[in-house]
Image (cartoon, rainbow, N blue to C red; front, side, top):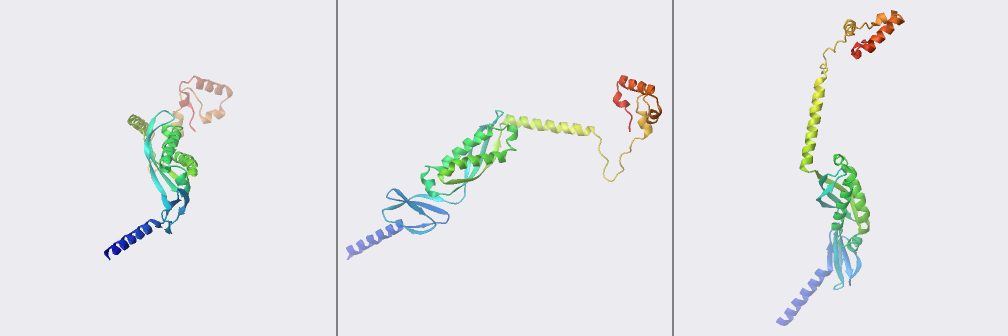
Length: 255
C-alpha cells in the first residue's frame, strides 16, 4: 500500500511538472518566440497558451514596450580638430519579435555601436561653436541612420537625445575668457553713450540755431540765410575753405 502511494505521488509530481512546463502565461506587452524541434514555430502573444510537451520550447522573450538605452560616453573630434566627450540616450521598440530573434544575435549591442559611430561622424561635420546649437540636427541624423539598419532586425528607433557635450578644460577656460572679454567690451561701449532720460521726464532739448551756428568753423562757411543770397564766387570760396579745413566734419551746418 505504501509503495502504491509513493508511485502515485511521483506520478502526480511528474504531471504537475509537465503542466508547469507546457502551460505558459504571457504578460501584456510581451512576446515569446517558440521553437518546435529546433525550428521556428510561432510567436506567443499576451494570454494563456499550452505547449506540446518535450517538443515546443520558448527560445526568446521580448518586451514590446518602448525601451531606453544609455549610449556610453565617447570622444568625438569636431571639424576644427577639438575633442569633445558626448553621451546620449536612445529610445527604441521591438516591432517584429521573429526578426529581432533571428535577424541578429544581439540587437541592443549592435544599435549602441551603430549609434556611437554615427554620432562621431555627425560631430566631425560641425565646428565646436555649433555643436550646442546643432543638437536637434545631430539627433535627427542619428535616428535616421540607425533606423535604416535596425529595420532588418525588427526594431524601430524612435528618437535619440544627446545628454552632455563636454569640451576639454583648456577649451572651457578659453571660451570663458572670450565671453568675459565680450562682456567687458560691451560694458565699455555702452558707458560711452549718454543714457536716455527716464520715462516721464522732459526730452532732451534740441540745439538752437544760435548754438548750431556757433559750432561752424571760423573759416567763413556761410549760414543758411547767407547761402541763399550769396553769389557763386562766395560759394566757391566757401567750398574751397571746406576742402582746406582739417576738421571739415565739424564745419558742416546743423539742420
